[in-house]
Structure formats: C-alpha cells, structure tokens
Length: 125
Image 1: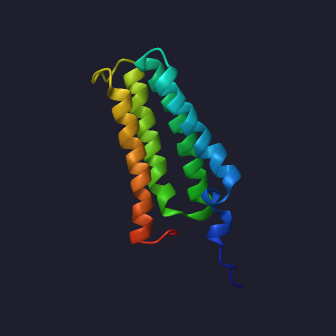
Image 2: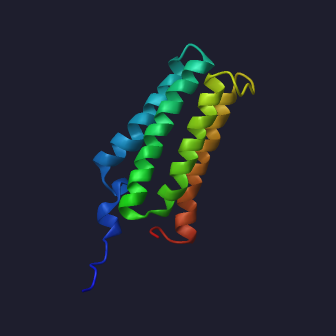
C-alpha cells in the first residue's frame, strides 16, 4: 500500500487569501494601530504580544499542515517576540521605553527574512 503524496501547496494557508488575512493581516493591523494609538509602551507591548501569539499559532498550524519552511522559522520567532514583550510589559526586562518597537522590529524582520531562505533552499520540507 503506497501513500498518496501530500499536496503542500493546496494545504498552505499563506496561499489562501482568506486564511492569510485572518491569521496574519488582521493581527499585524491591530499591532500597527496599537503602536500609533496606545497610551503607553506597556499597552503597545501587550497588544503586540497578543498579535504575535496569534500569528505564531497560525504559523505553527500551517507548518503542521503543509511543512512550509517559512512557518517553521516564523512560529518560534513570533513566540519568542511575544515572550520578550510579555517580560517588558511585566516590568521584568526594562530596556528602555522603545523596547517594544525594537522587539517588534526584530521579530518581524526575522519572519520576513525567512521568506529569503525559502528562495535559497526550498519552500516545503
């Protein structure tokens, strides 16, 4: 009995506009809005933390569905970014008032750079 090959492209949420919008565009928009409208760095950190947890969950589920390299890299990056923002919001990691912006920037840069690795190596594992 032979196994049917998995069609990774059909299972990839990144290729489905509705799923991509729900898992990544909405939380990104909420985080950007918080950066402009939140009253304190702590509030901004909490909103971005929730957004990163949501996006990391989407990446984890997508990695499980289609085994996309980008998702294997982005999911831990989003979760680590969320942890760093939670520490900042809790007052444990005081690195200055601009820490949330720096954490968000580094996390998003890692997520975006993981697309470059797909171009160099391959998209699906």
